[in-house]
Length: 477
Image (cartoon, rainbow, N blue to C red; front, top):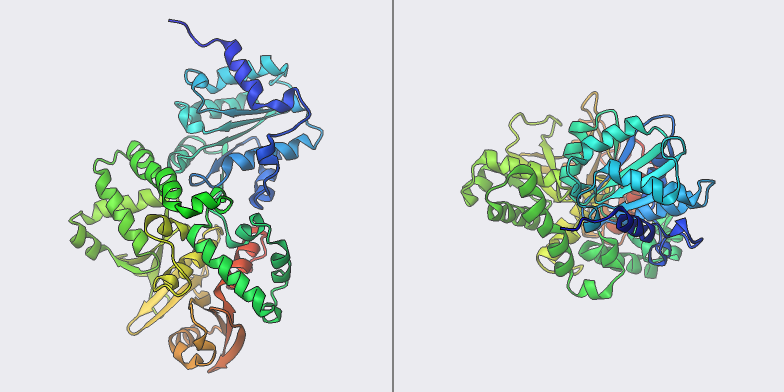
């Protein structure tokens, strides 16, 4: 039986790294794409030389990890780094099946004519989960090749995070690339003029046509806005379930999670996820889930942990009117990490759909999930609820509160927001945010200033501020 030769591997490496021999840079299909703003956050980790660590790029499937790697390479090529000292390897290619990271590195060194032990190099290992024991080999290489800056990425996000945490302590830096924010969605659609008018936070100065345009795009974002390939393809938008469900959700539920956690009943896991997705933004009872499904509560808890690890959902826990957390977490809310997942599972919605309120709330929470420092809860008590509450990590006192509405009537009838005002009074909050459909303004009720902003505008400002690091701990956006 013939074995794959190192010459064949070298030929493949040359095809994946065209910048070694030509001054063309990265492939045109990626060079012409607008980089995600997350590149500004990841690039300094990649080029940091004072700390000897590999970057592990995590994220759900199809959020643009490979494209962002190539945009990082494009930035490196514009510096003094020689093209031969930048190597991209798509580890899932069959030619690399029997090779370790160390062996690939040696073939790269010989092919590109680079001394990887003494020259500064950048090595990108895409789809790293296809390599057996990748975390062990990569950890050794980080120690033995201090001149190489490694970045490993993969689509099996839960597996990568687990192995990175277990084996890469002190050697790996995890970087999460989530689905698109609404801010990024507008940028990738080249809505630059609309974005520039939104930048100043002056919603009340926008023309009605701008508000209508923004809301139309917001509905599009809810329906298919989480994944770059979907928003740039009209064909995929006609049938988002074929792309999002088959290529993203099913691969996680049917392959990634069962292989990682040993899930025996895949249908049971799939059924639970479908139930949670349909009920995104609604309060869920662990007892009721168990009773309706016939699945033990402990099993359901484990499934929910697995789905969170795969970046499909996020659990938000409940506090009472006094902002005290419950010892027994039998009630909680589950949010999809992006609302377009629900659309792919069921059907697209319109602005007047009965599920629009839940998906607007999901969209707003999905912006907050991009912030690692936001401890979010919802408050519920006898006859009262507040949709989003942030607590101080040290004192556990509420910092701010938001009521998510998809209606304009509350600006005229602020008295209907009595629960929100009562919560603010109890915790000495002087103001709170309320979302609307299209109106903005402010009203003062019982000495609490209620700031009204359209949900679409709130999502835009929130996503922008999180990405640009402009969030203040005592502000809701």
